[in-house]
Length: 191
Image (cartoon, rainbow, N blue to C red; front, top):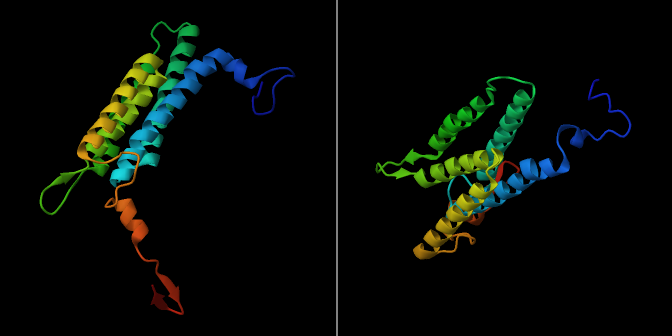
């Protein structure tokens, strides 16, 4: 039967693949936890004025979560179909290596040979690994590591003298907001 054409009467598309309990523990709870932790990490990076903020961290974490859930479901499907050696674990390896390219994009060396962006690259890497961990079904372990990293970032920032939930005055995003608006009227710039 073609799923796009429609389902028989009384058939629930969601429960065709998994029960509601499975949806809750395989998809919904890991998604909520991943979103919450990666949002906090991204908010802190954004408030410090770094290149990767909320959007980047949430997208990396949720994307990795999706890959892990897909791989988990593929593994279950292959095991159920009687494959003697399900090969569903190969997809996660691509996330682990691929996140390195994203992390490398935020690491820069300035004219004084000072390297910037290592912590942001590490938080992006953590967001991906966190999504993989939760998507693989390790909810308690993921909660533990998520709480640990959130506490670490919060304590580190408070010890440095700023609140990770408030935007720093000298951050890049704050400076962009203070720039005067430039309007062009009749081919002349007006501030």
